[in-house]
Length: 246
Image (cartoon, one colour):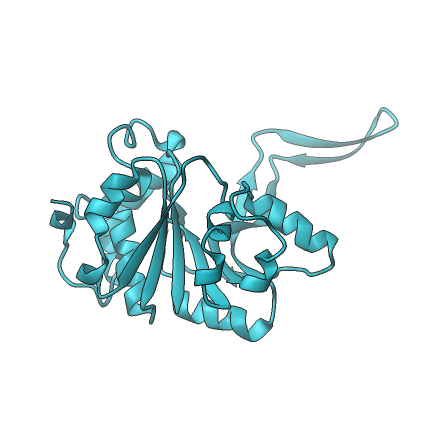
């Protein structure tokens, strides 16, 4: 059970919180760093090894996590000298990865069971599986349906429902073997290439708790909810170890 955590971004959407620390290390509830929660969860869900893909202020992440022994994990690192996108960092370490593995953003706050998710991906045989979440977007306007200059329909501030990526993926190594190590490769490009080839990715709909901490409004919400959610997010974790950064 191996996971790759993408932790190399600059976190520009979360400024000024990320001015002095990388996004995965911003605190939640003044008790844990986001990355710390993720590592505790991975251990609880059966993972033994983790690769951290780091870049911007990566030395701080190295100092905080170390070799992972404080979390009961074996942690290794891969460094980005320039931005490689969501999938690009995997290409440089592909020979070292198992045939099936988990990939996730380092700013995800969820009670998804990562181990069960990866096992479902493996059982599906899909090249990749995307953990998805149902979102609702409410229009602030009345929406008109117009044909040939005439209004043929009207909806007052309708709500649109769609599934979004949670930033958590099950990946089969074979889905990446055609790409060149060192190239920048985004999740969007990989999805489009797989669809074009007829090798469709899988979707795994999740109905639990999920926030994208990269968005300021979700970060504020996570802090407001954390005391109520801690037992659900960290049922098997020990006491806060934020001092691990010392």
